[in-house]
Amino acid sequence: MNRLITFLLLIFCVSTTFAQQQIDHVKRTYIDANGKVFINKVLPVYLWFTTSPTEKSDAILLKSEGQAKYSNPMYFDTEGRNNIKHDFAVDQETKQSVIPQTIVDFDIYVDGSAPSTSLTFAPAPKHTSGGVVYYGKGLTINLKSKDEISGVENIHYSVDAAPYQTYSATLPMDKEKGYVFKYYGSDNVGNAEAPSSESFTVDLSSPVTTHAVSDPKLGDIISPKATITLSFSDNLSGILNTKYDFDNKAGKIYSTPLALPDLADGDHSLTYYSTDNVLNEETAVTYKFYLDKTPPVVSNEIIGDQFAGVKTYISARTSIKLTATDNKAGVEDIFYTVDTSRQTTYSSPFLIPWTDGVHTIRYWGIDKVANVANKEYLTVTMDNTKPKTTITYGRPQFFTRDTLFINKNTTLTLNPVDDGAGILKTEYAINAGGNNTYSSSFKIEEEGFKSIDYYSTDKVNNQESANLSSCVVDNTPPVVFFTFSISPVDKKDGLNVYPPYTKMYLAATDKQVGADNILFSANGSPMKEYASPHTLDASEKPDKSKKLKKQLVKVITKDKLGNQAEQSIEFYIGY
Image 1: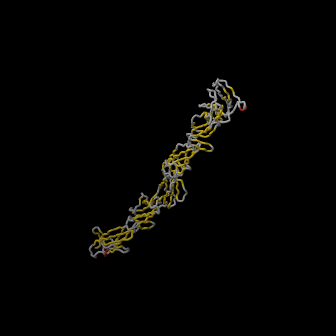
Image 2 (image 1 turned 60 degrees about the vertical axis):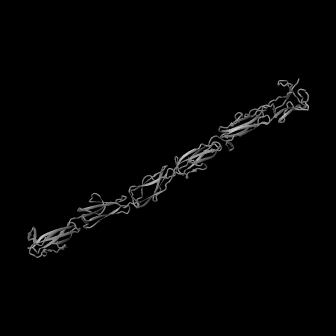
Image 3 (image 1 turned 90 degrees about the vertical axis):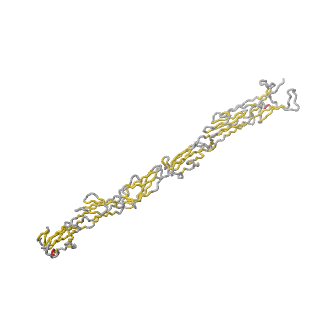
């Protein structure tokens, strides 16, 4: 019977045990879609033949008579295409050798090499630090394997020592963690390459940045002396850079603490964020603050006695009050010095040294974010000396027996003197009566003993102790006395009649200061001073007629204050 010799390659598979991470791959044969036969190079080969094309037909194992030690089994030594051949082809119909001679080849492909597998990372930010490889967002792994003979059966991978899986599509690395990724390829006849390993860390977290403001500050009100420090951290790949901007202006790379003097007084915002080395970018943080560059405004108030003229005068009772206002942070302290004294922290109104003369107060303030105001100056002149007042009596006046006598026409003048702020007012009282404010010279009308209390107050209310002066007001003129050298000899019209040789004698007395002089005029003649002991001879005045003649003598007398008395004396002379 026609027998088609079919060589059956009976392959005995040898199992190899790999490390536990790797799958066991059985060495085997493989027939591809085109009918090509592939065999793993390590497998033994036995040649059988049969005369039947059926698989279950009886088969006979061939033996080599000349090279028995190299057969049963035999091994292929060459990778790739190998031949089992018959040198003379026989026509299947005629059973005759084919002319020309034709060799019949039975091809078998021997494969002893494992595939070669490569790994590629899809584009993702990458950074290496300290021997650790970091990847950012979007990382995927692509595996590709090639085999030159039997072809790749599968690609296998393991993540973090998990059992190997069969690779079928791009693998996303979408969890933040450290990865140990192993992979290898296996071909269709059981050759498997040694696993390759990649260790890397996927960093999906953004950095965290915070700020800290140095003193001086008050909450979110900060001083231009303050600085803002940015602190940043990243738990994996580390910080690439930190950017910031003030008030949405062009951003800058942060390197050192941020100084603020170039910013204007007022509201501002600081925006900042960090980026790590695999380009994870933090959501921007905005810090709003008020930059307080304005120092307090300090003002002074003089409390109590004061007078502002060419100089500002105060008294020892006067205090200085300081107040301050601030535009934002508020006032922390007010400081002052007086003349060369040491700096003092203001707490309440203070007094100035009592020494007369000029004193200089320096004062300034500081707010709660350490803005210091420029020093202001207040110059005052201390007037701690009381005025002095004297009294001057005008004329008429007469002093005798330790007593000053004046009359209603005498002017009294008060003379206040003050070397400081000047006189505010002068007051006086007569005989402890009510106070009178002195404005100009005055007179005392009423007679009698008078005590005059007087004192002055200056314009910062320094008041001298009361001064006392006394006098006697004498408004009473002298009393005129007259007498005749003879008694009257008759009467006419109710007037005395004196003989022609009669003489008249004049005199005056004054109770207080005494009469000063006596003037007289007879019958209209000019007044002339009466000189004692001279007498008036009335007989000389008439016209020597023996008829009665009426006489009129006017007498004026004054005391030493000028108080004047006038008296007219009428009588008759004759027989």
